[in-house]
Amino acid sequence: QRQAVPLLKAEVPLIATGIEHKIATDSNVAIVAEEDGKVVYVDANEMVVEYASDKKRKVTIPLSVFQKTNHNTCKTHVPLLTINDKFKKGQVLADGQAMKDGELALGRNVLVGFCTWYGYNFEDAIIISERIAKDDVFTSLHIEEFVVEARITNQGHEEITRDILNVSESHLKYLDSDGIIIPGARVHSGDILVGKVTPREEISSTPEDKLLQVIFGEKSRHFKDSSLRVPVGSGGIVVDVKRFLKQKKDNLPSDVSEMIKVYILQKRKLQAGDKMSGRHGNKGV
Image 1 (tube, helix red, strand yellow):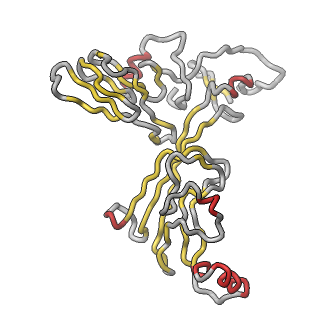
Image 2 (cartoon, one colour):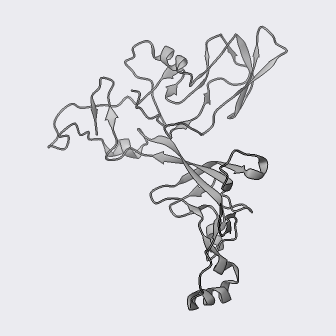
């Protein structure tokens, strides 16, 4: 159960042990009320509460939205209360990942048959119906981090830019004026996340280089395209972009002038090779 991936549509188990609520609240992924009070304001990013002990003081509780965990899964708080709802001390105000209505929810309640099926479930293999895969029954959300650095090389400084050689405007439509992908953009394999050019080493010009220099100007001879692109097999929605600059006193290595981190949210359906398990150690693939 410690390896369980938080599901997009998790369910509370029909047959419970009675301590699902305790496990969920003690795991520090849920937001629990410190005192009695009521909700003053709530949205996707924060919840403002008023405690009964001091009604003049408003407490703002930040909520996580598409936050990356150490396991590359997605951490998001889902508020359970609306404005003017009252709550008691210890009540769950917002669900965390692998939770539903304040209870632990690691998986789904599905109809399972324990039998052999023409050899397809040999050696702990598991057969699922097509509907389970199509209807996102075991679909999970993951966040991948992509990092690009602008280094200081012997030939000069690498540059983060939107002005990339031999790239059409259609491939740059989701980049801002600095050449960085805009949060909310849907990207696919090969799309540019951050535009970057690197100075070339000074070498003797070939006829091809001279032709490129005439067509594209001086820049093509001195710089090459080293942009950060979405790897093959990846893609999704850009949920966050973080930019670190040496000029702003950010903690960067001595040979790095700028670092950009791009976070992409992926929806992964259940597929061949994924590990599944019941609640009794009956795992399979």
